[in-house]
Image (cartoon, rainbow, N blue to C red; front, side, top):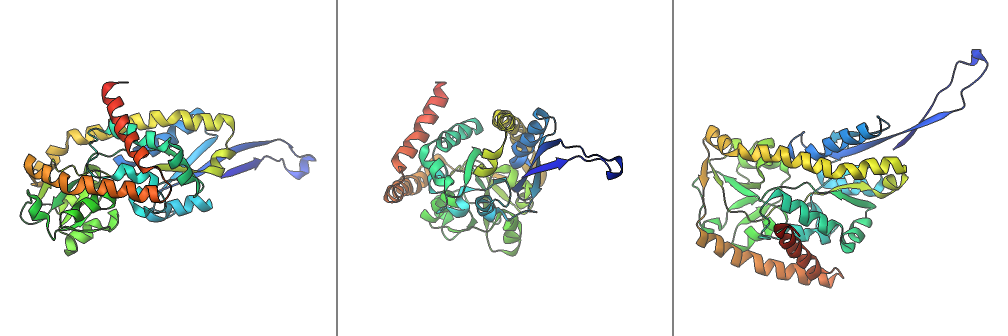
Length: 338
């Protein structure tokens, strides 16, 4: 929000100071607590403030402004200026970017996740899609492939997923459903209680979330190489708020995105390096799925879900095949260095 501070001297002095200085203050809605998943948002706020000498600041709120599944709605009505959300929370509101949540896309690193996400965000279809909610896509929140933590006997065969109650959203949920599991989309903050109460047997998260939301503390095993996909969680800004920025403020914001992402990648990389130690300390068994089982999972889940997604998008006037091809081409270019 743009706040105008007007300086005035006491009336007894017989005059008032007519000048005024403008400062910009944005409210940012995220959820949970500060963790690897939000480090780029925190870094962005820090960089923008530094570059504008404190004239453009961001107040990052963890659940104080909105629920995570309502952040896009909040952006649309201007309740706050910036927010983070995940595409799978409301697939009908942001169908174009759900291409990034299709199972078994083959994204292997966080750097590749950044590349494919930002390529899709820059596509006209995605920008038009989010513009319906007065939102501008700013940057992604890159996460590694999701894997399961679970209780009971470790599951290392696709047949063992039948009737498994799993916390999984978006394309990952569809993938598990395709092999007979029963996905539920309880929120991240509810996942621990869902495990504790037996509502779910397993939870699909990235590593940081298993730590932040405590599901690793209920786990008896972890699938190290299932890698069915990930979720895509963009950071967006309210278009009106972005357009209201001065040229200098907008330059400070835009130029800070790459730096914020680099900080995120370094921080998350450190977490991944110590993950095996975390498992060992907590007595969690690492489960390696045999390649034949992984191939069976991909065959059952990946192709049919992708083909149906493309068909559904094209029916809505969204270039689904073009978006999918963009992801594949971006992966190829990123790996070749072109």
